[in-house]
Amino acid sequence: MLDKTKRGWWKSAVFYQIYPKSFQDSDGDGIGDIPGIISRLDYLEKLGIDGIWLSPVYASPQADNGYDISDYEAIWPPFGSMADMERLIAEAKQRGISIIMDLVLNHTSDEHVWFREALKGRDNPYHDYYIWRDGAPDTPPNDMLATFGGPAWEYVPALGQWYYHQFAVKQPDLNWENPTVRRALYDMIRFWVGKGVEGFRLDVIDNIGKEPDRKITCRGPRLHEYIRELSREAFAGEGLVTVGEAWSADVEEARLYSDPSGRELSMVFQFEHNFADCRPGGSKWDLAPLDLPRLKRCMERWQKGLSGQGWNSLFWDNHDLPRIVSRWGDEGRYRVESAKMLAAALHGMQGTPYIYQGEEIGMTNIRLPIGEYEDIETRNFYRERIEAGIPEVEAMASVYARSRDNARTPMQWSGAKNAGFTAGTPWFTVNPNYTGINVEAALADPGSVFYFYQKLIALRKTCPVFRDGDFTLLDPDSEAVFAYTRKTAEEELLVVCNFTGEAVPYPLPAGFEGGELLIANYPAPETGTLRPWECFMLWRGPRK
Image (cartoon, rainbow, N blue to C red; front, top):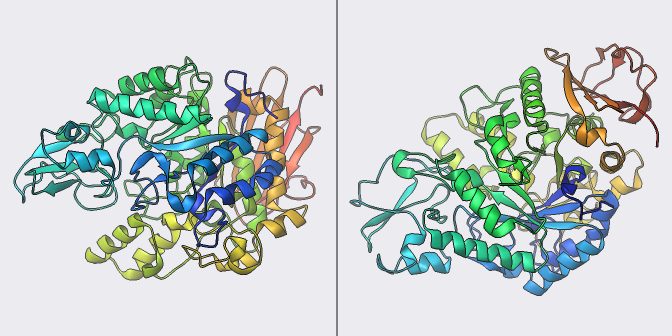
């Protein structure tokens, strides 16, 4: 178990993201809940994780599955009560697991009391909690578009004003220029720290410094001023883990977010690597084959760029992304091998790994008729593409590959009805392959993806090179192999991963012939050849 009293303990930690709605239902209503999470803590302890990133459990009308918060200091009733939340925090802590709450500081729900008051008039003290602009009903302040589709401005006839929403119309953006807003948010954070929460993942934090009149949505001129104040007023002295989600971050920006001085945040959650299979200049929906050299150059840039100057999050999956084994692996014949390979490629790098629920058993994407998708972004994308004349087969190919709902199907616990997720009717479709891919089967199989993740997590705690080693990319132009070394004064680690379903020649780099095999997804490496989706880690150093 990690000593969490040590500064920077999270550099050796592995976190596990739970999407509560889809994790475990305890009362048969078809919706995952906090008591359900508590019932699975022993499973997570067995996996070996050090903390849970808990997606929003706050009161919400669920227009965006909880990322539209109507009360920061209350629990959405289908998830349980505040007493349930307090029990989760306490029981997790007993197992050495920290609770890291997902916190949305960029916007609220339009049903939050602040916004309801703001609608009462321009003189209401809460009116300035949000971003308003005067204008005629048919003339928005400008042509900015919302991330989820459509204009970013919504007209309120009673006020003769438009409010700004970077995401859904029911998610009005908070006005961070108002110091009263900031103080209210800091007070709310202290409320949760008092409950025993040990950190926060800050949703779209790069948007809080927006200047919509200049069409600036992220990385605004006051962004880092705001984050430093947030850190100073709400986080300082608490030993909290703080993770900034920043889709816009580059390496230089990330050094500011995660400066080792601690002025801002513990680490950055950035997404540049997620565009290695998108058409250049396109959106995430514009599909292209994985460009492995591009992915490797991206990873190298972040590994070298933050070494000693910041800290990165490592992830393939989350609630906004498709399942990695379907995306860059082989969800069919080589599902197990490719899931392990992808895990090894990621967990060998410097940074704090995040495992998304089900990733540790190799869960896959799902294909549904468009009418069965729940995600607002997916539905809006499909409608816009069809209206633009894009053939339905092309639009649906993008939905199948990229919809956020791929990650939101219920957790597959067993081969029983509804995958053991609920005794009732699931809120969202269970992937039909649950009869073969589930936790019960994984725990019964010593060669499962689960036990591979368990071993990777343990390795990060026993070999300091995972945390501290310098990164060197090998064979940067190879379109099949992702290989790199990590090196300290005492240890050296070699990570080799075949990103294809074909056997490829691969001579072992000089000096590693006698290296200790730490982990592999085949019984033993073959000399000079990598089998389909093969991976292994070799280690050299003194045994203590």
